[in-house]
Image: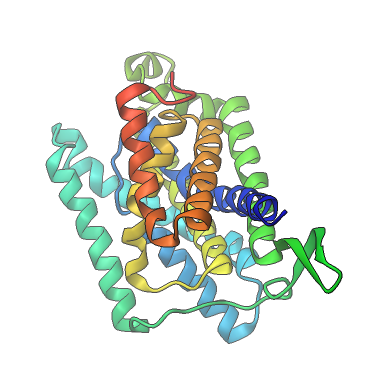
Length: 300
């Protein structure tokens, strides 16, 4: 009975964690999977979104997730500016490889240092009406005096629901609008897009802005689930790219499936082998995916 309880809790925790990972990785699926821009600074913008949610929540008490959607246009504009710099400095000259990686590494560390100078290295967290509440969905009687519960902490349920709604809307937008189809096509045939009167650079610029807007929202979801500090973003670099590659390059649905697989794998690893082994899971799954199915589960 106790093993069944542990397995059920691991499944629930893994799925909820996978929802968070899907939100964190969906922006990478756009920038890396569709635009071929290796933005390894993406987790830094997630942490920036976390700190903006923290500032607004701690000073004015506004819900961190609502705040993230309100400020997401600012992340979008930041993405437009960042891609313009990237394009004129590297992509236009055909130097997207090592030099562009150094560029995004620089953005990553500059963002981290600025946050450390402003906030220090202490962990920060937010509070909301749902962060301290838990729903029990199952109960098992071990003895007449003791029971085991399968719990749904709302601090993970709410981000999961918001993540799934956001990703569903994003997938619909990319599949059913002209701009979305142009984003899907820009990495495949830019010449055909130009024949249709579409500027691929502007499409990539706006899509990159969209990926950063999603990162800002994912940052708020992250700080609802767990406390953050400036350097924690580096811990998620391998994770978000593992989800992107595992699900399939450029596939939003694949990112969700890959995130769920990764969340379940980490949850079971933490439950039965210890949390210290969990970070190795993302890299292990990434290596397996590259070795046996390099196109990913839903790769084109």
